[in-house]
Length: 292
Image: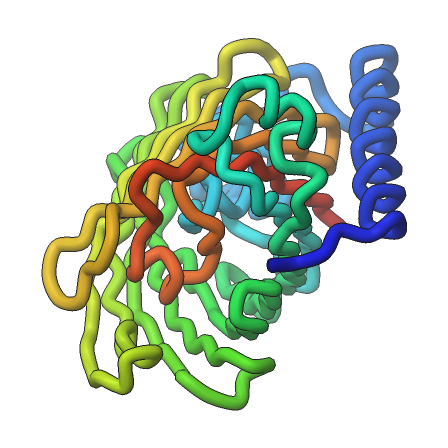
């Protein structure tokens, strides 16, 4: 179990306040130098104007909840993301008990930090650390194909390796592909086949898992989205239930704040491959900030 501290509460509150104040500023006045006619989907960006820094309203973040998206990162641009998955299981105990625990906030959290950087055009690298098993994950994503007038989908290839105990044991490399389809500036759907090696390392068994993540994001207002995903296993080691989650998020300029619910606390490819838990639901949030 992970102990929640006064410092983490203050940090979370400050982050939420930053999002809310940024949202108010965005509504009051558009950023200088931006156009009200900015592209609203990848298909609106002509190949000659293939600018990775142009906002894509249907795809505002590099994650759905835990699965990756096809959003591109400009060269030398960066993004910071904070993930929280609280320990309280909302499907256990009474409603009064969950309210008394602030829906899990009083029971600690598994916290993760990610930093990604655009190392070359269409190529980004990320490092992520989560408190679940003290896993470090390193991965790269190459955004090879962008949806346009002649291309119906976007495609991204990814390579990852993660290790427990601060990358000292139980290494799990992964290979995957992200396929997305935008429908205007309102809808994005994803299919993410991923192969992960060494998913049964805790049992000292050499096993692999192949899962196909399915996700979607719907923009229900100018800056509010509904998101959902599920990661059913197609073959290999597949304990427990497939991981799934859903949530609501708010975009405010370069910030994105998402409140989500998941049937597990896993956020890496290896953890998603092992699945979620039966009769479980955990409150959590993602907070992201772009620097480009």
